[in-house]
Length: 246
Image (cartoon, rainbow, N blue to C red; front, side, top):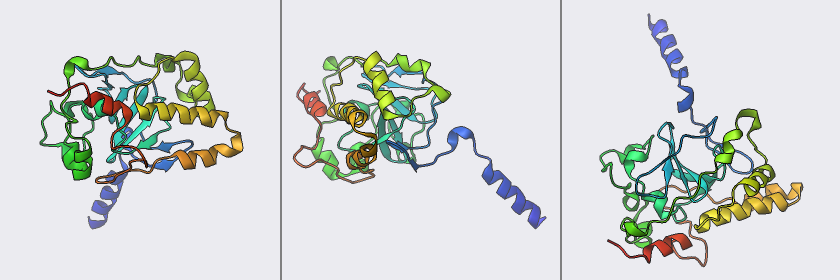
């Protein structure tokens, strides 16, 4: 009986739903965070915010300002294509409108979210520490009358799935430039688009080195990844604070 119980326990440990499997691998040109989106996501606007989310996703999956955003394992990631590859984005560079999305729209909230108000944003200041909170004073108060329009969805990506999904950075950039004319307002989105364009233009042998130099470090609680010479907020976030607060 003892051996039977041990065998059953080992068998149960190997049975994991496909959507729940999480793996972290270094990919090219970004990070594979183990979230597989086999087809174009079902994106729905978050009421009152210029952000979309996927209510059918098994992850914290959003779209804002021309990029897809995922909050996974206490890190934020962004991609210009719905199934990556993903680039890690540190706490100081995540756009405020993404951080303001209420808890109820996180489809796979981490444990620290439990007990927080569902109709309010996560307690990022409490989670990331005093330095982040001091650098983002008033981040959760803004003039709701001046909320920008949501970026158009890159629906041209619907026709690319499975074996037709583009993985090469130059292919992704070429398709985006051909089908998606939106000009991002956030500095982090502009940098992402510019980096991909540079990778497309670089000779093949130089792309790997360029990616290693451009890739930001992953950030967890309490880390400060402010670029030298920049403030604690990106350009888009500064612009938002100037609209006035409630």
